Length: 437
Image 1: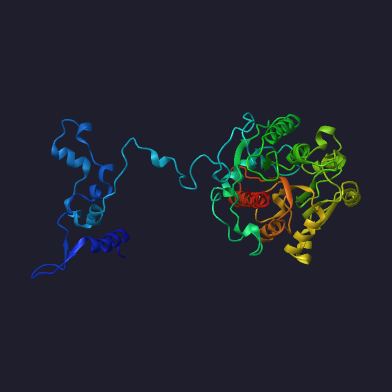
Image 2: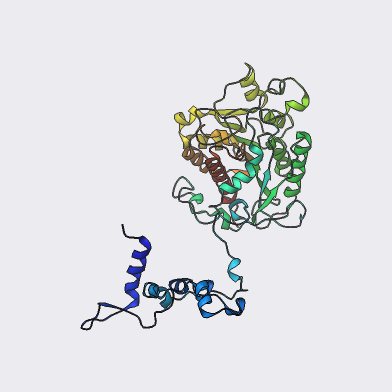
């Protein structure tokens, strides 16, 4: 087998030689200007040994450092004839652009960082914020690493139109690049949530969300304050997100909540909390009970999507529908009504109310992701993206992605990160499409 480097050099050498033939000569002749060592011709000054750094060395010693070998001169002619000119050694002007997508400090989709918690004079249209918290998980922890995981999964996002965004050619989403649509979107980093006391951690999250919501918008055509997409974190965090969003954008009867999840999360706190204490009763399966009780949720304008986990008690279904006011679409309803049919029904339920959308990663089927409490029989990637795009036109004032379990050395972390980022990308599309300057 011929060595590929030799083949490359040979083929390219054709373009660097004179095409003339004289008696007794080879067909190809080396260009008279081609000379020098292979390494010098290819890399030039990058590897050239400067005498000033090696004072007193003889020419033989210098040749030892430079690795001179004139037998390779003809093979490197193409490089010598196409010299690469490096910038001056102190010139860093090319460092100002975007580097490889896998490099750099990781913000979501390479968005600019902002000191959102303190510099509240800065105008921001949409903020990304992390909530690294998993003290409310009843089964499998690891979502404290979710904000970082979602950002890692977003490294190939941030520019260009997505050919599968929007469900038809007439959709505004089809022609949308949310990152360059005229709205200012920044990554605020994570709220510093203590891992030792959920009461303090959730209070920290509320104060962090409140601080971000106080920022004025910049180019928004519909909103005076900053909207937030939160990277979780277990689902308990949504209670604080909803509280701050309701105080900022909410109407007197609450926000319409679209809840993608395998579980209803309106469980009786005395049951899912184990009946141990009030402290234990607030967790990732009871937060919607408390949110409804507090008035953050608009009853009869809110909906579950993807439900398939068993109910804990016989009263759960009645409590969820009557006391909390949620309508429910199970994962099998997707097969019955289809993805676009489900999206239309969701839009009819929320109407023209302001909407908060919370997405639990366990909406996806069990083999696709890591999450706090996985359940079989979930949705596929295409089903989720089609339903989300079908919600185009809703008045989305806030959203989150939760239960992103990307703890170190866990299986499926890469796909979990990627799907979390893709959901956020869709949420940003929904938040931007009706608010383009």
